[in-house]
Image (cartoon, rainbow, N blue to C red; front, side):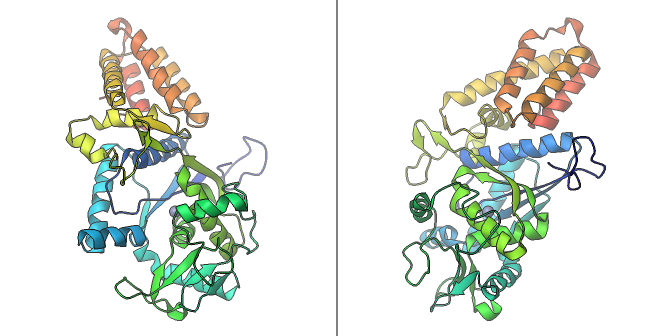
Length: 393
Ligand SMILES: [Zn+2]
């Protein structure tokens, strides 16, 4: 599946194995909360597992550094939108470093991609997949024929799509649209909003989905091995991005879509309006070991929705201490090799990180310093680092 030249039975692949991973990045208007962290740590484990298997990974992530939520927050707080974006991108990067998330090979902003977006939107208009309203806004026709067909990413029916579209940034009510589901590709300039030269499109700024379609195509290459993000991105964002790219290239956007579950707090959805966001940088400031935060995230399977409760961090800190004590006591080489093989096996089974942490618990329970050897100890520490991104040194 991950080999570009592989067409025959397993083992017949001769060319280098490669994977193209595109994960939707943040809109930088607020600090990283645990839900974001869960997403980027899940894809970090995927990248680590691929690298461990000798697969060459091209990992691309965008940052939506111009969009409505960012401009609204900037206006509400009286901060220049560019300054807000820069400061939040810096904070996000520092959070990712704390959590030992390997950086993507390409971290690309929407603003720097505007010339490519203009080119793509113009091509969509020229091919009849997009149309322009009287006010200059350009919309994509969801009725455009694409392969696989529209709806294949989210598996939602049209009736299910409509309310979700309205909830997640879509504008079904906009007058003049051919279909309420048609998404914005290019927003014509408005007074007081940033704008860029759009050539024949006129001045304006990009829509959200086209940004990812264009960045993924340019920096990762299509088809992506995996297009990823939080489960709230499946529709409309990934559905629309895939359709845009498929209209532009005539080929499937991605071989697989991986969506990470949502994280709530103490029984409620985490949201800015409820004021219950668990912010990574705040936990670190309060003295939490970032490796314990990472262990909390890894103790839940990436596909499940789960609740963060305050005791989880203490539990993870205790587990981490036990693993570190075991690593310090040392381990027999044969046991170490067995543990590493088991870790690889459970992670290869749909990234079962909770099972991987259970294996570490068992190993720590059974370890005693009577039969350790330095080679075994090093093997475990290196594997836990390489596969799970947890530093036991
Ligand atoms: Zn995206």
